[in-house]
Image (cartoon, rainbow, N blue to C red):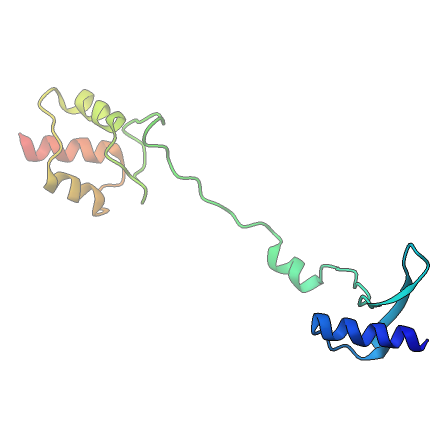
Length: 131
């Protein structure tokens, strides 16, 4: 027993570990000698509390935005906060307004301002201002 305590003290000095003797468990090595190892704390089983379940259930509703690059654009297509001046939008407006259609800064700013609600309103406004 005395030899084990001496080994524990040497190991503490070498590793700079300061554990009280109550936390050390003696275990045997392959050669039959015994050395002290720190005891592992008991592992707690993790459970999900009811409060945590209430925070995550029901799942959040995620609003899907319109795909301005690939989605079908018609006169009734609603403008959302993710509106983009894409080639698909340009093709739609060329079909509605004619070959003279061009985007300009004031027209793009008007679209992004939130004034129009559908792509039909956008086409009508361009026709109204350019005729």
